[in-house]
Length: 316
Ligand code: UDP
Ligand code: MG
Figure (spheres, rainbow, N blue to C red):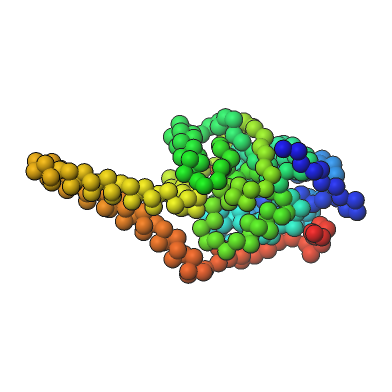
């Protein structure tokens, strides 16, 4: 698909970079050095770098404080507690004034050196430029296998196609940032939502490095929460599945009853299991609706750092 090149006559476009950080004090200075080296060398752009502290307890905020004091293009946002990676990304996207905004992990698993390539494709007219993982260094077999299977399952269940093997390392155009931050969805699954809008999307591939310091902050519990969110947000297929399973079990039970065999006894635990699963699935959707009705904010910003002198604000 041929896109129209973005042209800016009166000013240089602003590239926003959002870095969600949860207990990343150990690596953050290194991340900052690599990011600024890339961003200072990026011709034709202004940049703003936004570190979002997602309720760290390890001195991450102190590091962000010292980094934000260096230059006006660096800002910090501190959430009042750990709201989770998705909320931290959303907070950064809302804060950014970038004409295009990149979300990148703090642990250097996503190479900052890829940013110029993402920015160049945005210039060429793409609204979403995802960074697709060709390989994943230093991650457990469980993580790699579960991610591989999950994205494919999600894609087959979703009513729109999703970029495979991508996390949240991507560039999105201002128009899409506005759409994403404008939806009042309390269960927003960012990496799925970006594709939902159907704007011109492309990807570049990269080899994912190992985390440069510390441990993964995505505990199994957080991974499960994220995949639940993705499944619920992406489709109603799980709800339908429970109907199908229920129907199948009921039909099976009826058949067994008709045959008057002992199979009836076997059908009981089966029916109970299917019932419980179906109830669980309905419960998940109900919980999602409940969260929505509660209408609580996605996160609470406790502190902001940075100069009043921000880069040129968005004009469109
Ligand atoms: N992160 C966050 N809040 C959380 C968990 C993670 O902001 O509750 C950040 C974390 O600091 C990192 C990114 O999200 O910048 C990805 O997390 P991590 O590297 O731990 O996940 P993994 O790469 O192991 O999937
Ligand atoms: Mg990581």
